[in-house]
Image (cartoon, rainbow, N blue to C red):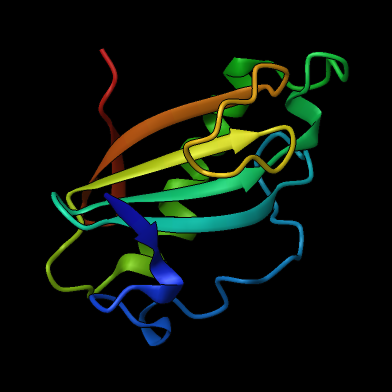
Length: 131
């Protein structure tokens, strides 16, 4: 079971300042990326940071997965890690997702383009958990 961080009894808003900021975030690809939400898994120390990145849409043909992958690593290290620093218990996994449009968590959206990456926080670095 998961729940949004903003309503979590485990982690309060003070641990995640400015989570509702709608400003575009600067990422390596230069595409406009905005924060959608963060979801803390009650079990296992996983937190999901979800972002909207319209230029990954199939129709846009602007940002491919290789570019988006660099953006996700950047977002993990420069956005997610500062938000979870000092959280107790410590976060053991950060999942970064990009979607070309807002999609409700857990909902199917076959027409949406979505990319996901999982990382292990190690100090100030996000270590990719892929194969």
